[in-house]
Length: 409
Image (cartoon, rainbow, N blue to C red; front, side, top):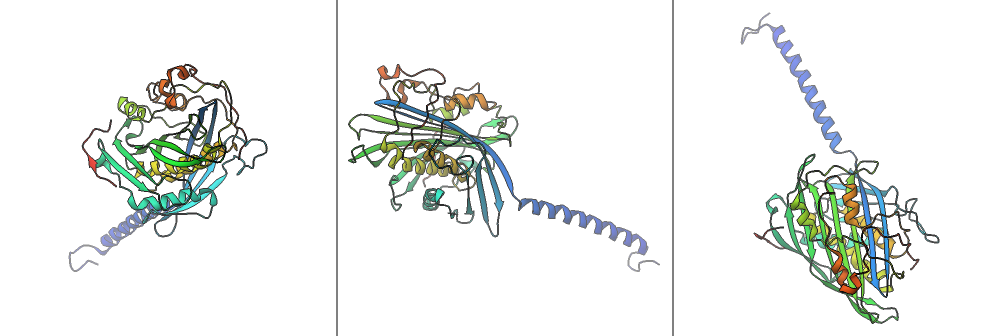
């Protein structure tokens, strides 16, 4: 029989209809698989390098490293659960209580992408939750139009309890480095203005501590994933009657599941100049007289350093996704190192040297600065700074603005 409208055999249209049905089924299947995959868990791996140094009437240095996994799981609505777990952090020192088999244990939290708010039932990241939820309302969203520009970002923390700065103000810049394997990246740097906090000296009297934080984060072009982060925190005081200085450097970089760095080959002099302004040191302090970390660095300044790292990370991303995943282990490691709950792990040397040795594409770049001005040391004191890696020292047990057209280099 023939179709009365176009004189085509009915068999012809049945065949075409069958083909269309099959094609539609394939499209729906592929679309369904893609949608299903987009709602499933994904895991990224990072390595973190952390070093604490102190100078006063003696010196202190601790370095540690960790592999950690970050699992991301979309939930109902526009919320996402993050689970951060360490794979091989150094074992805790004798007498301390480990948070888990690796020391840092596992923490989880949920981020609402509509509001940027973070929620968690864990007291371990209470500070992250408080600082983030206070800061997200004033975040300046960062996009590709900010490449090559510099702008201001400030956070008001006066409503928070505890020894955190009343406010943090940053100068933020962005560039677009390029790698051979991943193409164009987005890199953002945040340099804080000096801030002050009150801290107790060894006799219990209160004194003033001056601090600063500098940080840089490198993302993929869409700013969906972190590939590298570096931060430098510094604090100094005369609370105990003489000058004391504390320095904390930390870096993270993306790896495979075994801890091997992704290939960053292609990074050039623009990246080098950009990261040098963080002030990573070329040489580590030499331990001539080993001392414990003083009380002021293990109490009030510890909370300030954690809050400063969180704020600098937020300033670099302009949102909480996925910076928080790196903030959590960084903040916890600062605390555990300062409180003597982490044994020194290996001899990683300086953070700049460890990055050069571990991350393809960084070895030929000069990302550190000369050590002569290390934590404000005099020329005489600078003479005790040793080149290269120093011996590992065990930790002593103890308690929105607009943008401008200025160059980003």
